[in-house]
Length: 358
Image 1 (cartoon, rainbow, N blue to C red):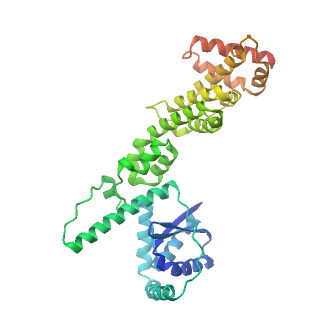
Image 2 (cartoon, one colour):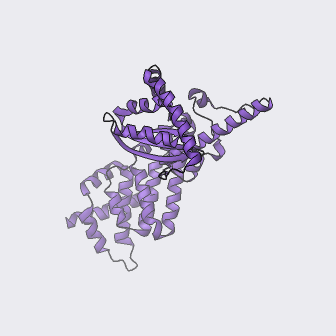
Image 3 (cartoon, rainbow, N blue to C red):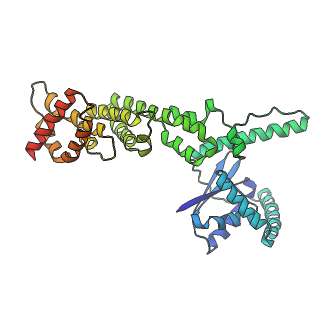
């Protein structure tokens, strides 16, 4: 399994960084998969992709050469501290400290007198990277305030630090009214919020509060878009299917989010793509009610959607060929007690017609 190490450094040290990473790539005891350069505000970054079991070797190489490793979370920080404690006691660390000093001096001289050709770094920022940049920016602002206060002998106003910031020393409280999490929630990006919950424990509590509202917003957004025009129907159907099949969402008991998404999915399919209802009826990972109601909607299209009372033979034959009637009957047996009499009538009518064709 691959993992990544992100190091941050000043632009003035780029030649030194290139030199160390070149040595790392030539090291036969470590298998570097990929190296990606980027930038966070005034800092350069480099992400090194390596196998999990080789992570400590990369840590050692960077730390022994005085290169700062970005701590993604508390557990990651402990690994960095543990590795640093080991390398700081080694003779190689002292030698490389001197080397780093001379390398940096040489780079400053080269920058002043020459213009080295350096490959333009590839900047790749994910949703999690954007959150990291916000935290880094806040830390930078706070540091500038402290430095200004020290120069002017004015006691700075204390920043309000959340409980999570005391638990995770690298975490800074984020303005909740204008945070990345708030934006993700408004846009219905529940997957982005779930990634934050999993990867940024300092923001866990607030992210968890926004997870369910984000799912609701996602359902409403794609229901509205899907019902509006055929152009958005395919995207809406795909997004709503992901929700109704999501194990974590189905496990939420406080809200029937999967049921809401299922109703939205059936409505969008019924308006723009009735054949897609057959695919919904055959889904194995969804609630039984969604499967049954999709089948009922198919029945309405086949038998009741014609002004002159004609049966839609084409859709009937297609349904008979594609729908798993045995699984559908099992779902109906579970849901029969809770669906309306009209839905029961439509279900039985289509089921009988399909049975005659098979």
